[in-house]
View 1 (cartoon, rainbow, N blue to C red):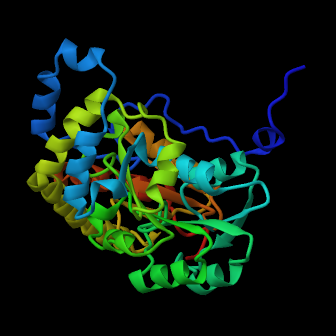
View 2 (cartoon, helix red, strand yellow; view 1 turned 45 degrees about the horizontal axis):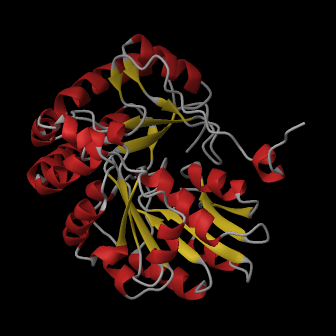
Length: 358
């Protein structure tokens, strides 16, 4: 009887709750207002000739590299950040290796690492979700071959400082160190320039958030000129589709759209934080386009009550350290108005936040 590898049989599965997503979708941290109008114009101009040929990554990679201030050899366009994580695991992990993951965080770090048979070492965030810098340093062993850190982190919104990240690269020179900057546009600080000279540093970016291109599945993995050819060896030459490659240069060029949307989100985030304080609902400081709330024992009822008002939010209570927590994406000013009205109604109805202390 055919049987999968032991590592595959034992790995965790990820089932994103994508069914019945109708209404105001504040559950997956996507751009809630759509992509740049210029991107839509480019898509409408796509011809049959553009689609019948295999996609060519190099022209778009040169533009992306220039956008990041890097050399083209340092940049690989990927099928979202998910593929970037997968490629690093395939390139550097053996079953006898260890992978350090700071939890709670994006599930795919752990899943792709487990698929190789490597052992996942989970380092829990501090009690207030601060980055556990000293714990990470302590977890590094000679068997460590990959460390994955999201900054800002999902679902907490917390960040690691550049100094902390650079110290980790020095402490684990024998390991690939991935810094996932998926929410960079809402934070503004990056270690991308350090990939020019830091041998084991990799940085991932996505266009699924501020740029509004989640449906096109395109991301960037950056690293040194010496290491990126290794990653390219395990990459499919056609993993990024032609539509994504044709629209990416337009999306990068429209910086005003991304900057304006990110600024609107940050203003909305401050409004939501103030309303939550008024409602005595605890939330943690966030540098991303979402907030994590401590709802308490009624977290399921809270999510259901918001859905009844056609607003989707994400229950994160099963994440390590997130008991009773719900994550809410921040959208445009008008969407924030609608969110705040619903929050006030649901808070009056359920009295959330009192069962579990912050």
